[in-house]
Amino acid sequence: MMKKLWGFLVIAVLFFTLIWVWTSKVENSLGYPEFISGGALFFIIFLLCLFNMRKRLPFLPIWSAHKWFLFHSVAGFLALSLFWLHAGVLWPKGLYVQILSLLFYGATLSGIVGLIMEKVYPNLLTRIGSEFIYERIPREIAEIRNKAENLVLECTEKTGSDTLAQHYLETLGWFFQRPRFFLNNIFGGQNSQTWVKEQCSILERFLNEAERRYLEQIFALAETKRKIDYHYSLQTMLKTWLLVHVPLAAAVMTMVVWHLIVIQVFFN
Image (cartoon, rainbow, N blue to C red; front, top):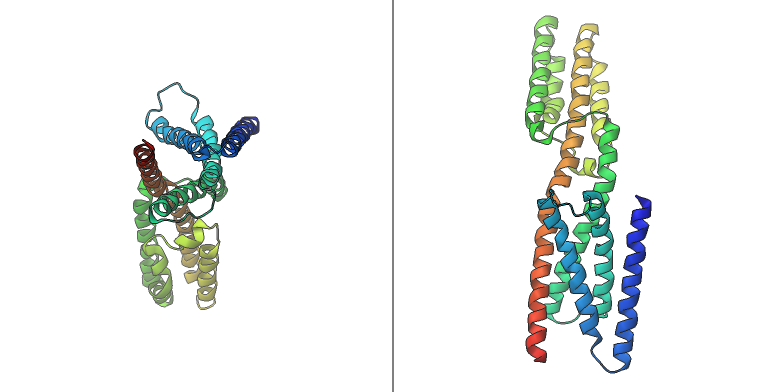
């Protein structure tokens, strides 16, 4: 993997160096270096768009998905470097180019976020030690909630005490209703685990031996629910970030094509 990554990085550096030297020579000869850097940038953006086409046509024998991912990641940073070379500034003047820059930066930032998630989230999910299919998560949560509520009812009927039931209605019931701690989970936090342990430890002091056995079962269900919430948060991010990145990338490509048309019309 590292050899392939370094190979793409070397090619990207050589390509950028070639374009930078070329534009410098054209500028020194009083030509239009923007044509060189702009053409190179358009070429790289076009190659970046091919990645989405490759994912839609996985049967094509053109590289593996892993190689395409590495290429796409390196090419994305190369495109950012070429954009700065072409624009000459981080934030250009003029509404038209500012809109184009905003879209380009948005696509780049969403791509970097996606790259980080693709590298970090699978490891976080593996550490949980459980697997949950995303589409089945609502049903999984409903089943756990029903089990917890049945345990609370059984405890109340057999022990004659409603302490556990009252605590469940006031606190734990909120946790079992739906996925919780979404923001904390996507940043790898452990707030849900701390919260569950705290709520159960507070209640344990007010329960007798029989009630504690029910609380232990509810705590086990809460631990499973916590793992499901973690999967829900991370898988939601992995599945939905493309809904931001792909439209932004398409908008950038559209604006770039329009930009080329305007340039051709202006200089002809």
